[in-house]
Length: 138
Image (cartoon, rainbow, N blue to C red):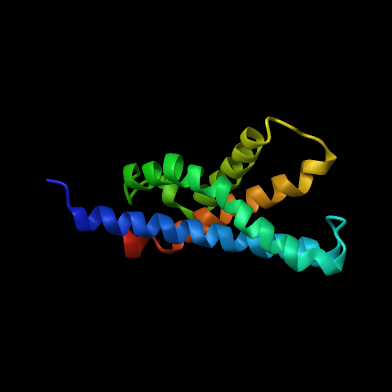
């Protein structure tokens, strides 16, 4: 018999991990904007950062529904994939892969920051999942 409370707790765990990754992405976007790495003017950084923080959800929601929930429910707590160094590395690679898929494989100098933020979001999502695993996984 399926325990509904256990599934709900695991879904909540995926949402917490997703928010952790999103927060890391927003911090990266703000740092990139305020340091001028992305070429933005400082006056438009706040508006651009808010817009990109909302826009990031258009990428995160499909990945959360298709990939993160299914992996979180399928991988047992005792798996080696839950080791921090393995999970964070795979999360960064998954972030790069998702960025490549969403951008149609566009690999040029203008996409470097996008790929870097995607890798950080993936790694931070997995880090949050590993840190909160004992609270949400049975």
